[in-house]
Image 1 (cartoon, rainbow, N blue to C red):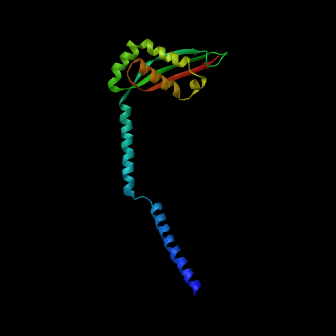
Image 2 (image 1 turned 60 degrees about the vertical axis):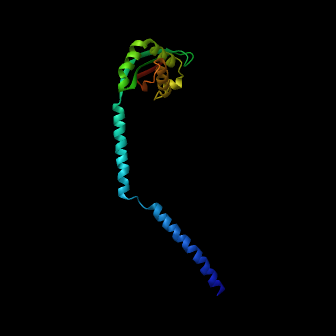
Image 3 (image 1 turned 90 degrees about the vertical axis):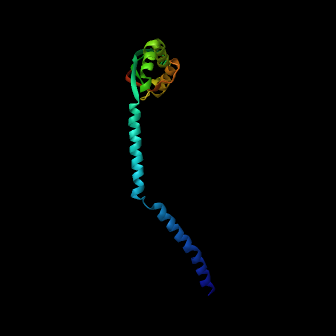
Length: 163
């Protein structure tokens, strides 16, 4: 009889724990209600709309075409680099930026581009995204213009030739 009481006590303590674990597992593993999924879809659609609007808020301003030689990158060889630079600028600032960057401060902007490219390391020049060069161009051109005009730099028609 004593054995039966201990079995009953053990069972009485284990069964509620098992039931509680099952309820918790069911609640955590239950699929979300379809109504809850709709707001997420709406949020995703709203974010896409905002991204599209954000793209419309910027304009591309062509800064110029550049050709440079970098002798420091690889001693004993010469690296020729050519590319075009475009700045993404907020629409309301386009006219002011275009005037400052391509007329008033054109030579200083070209000097910044030349200094950055000629002092770049081979890894930076071979980076498929040219991330470091783009970041430095954005920061330094904004400094020359004494205002944060540029949101992003785009480099295209990029050619690197080592001799």
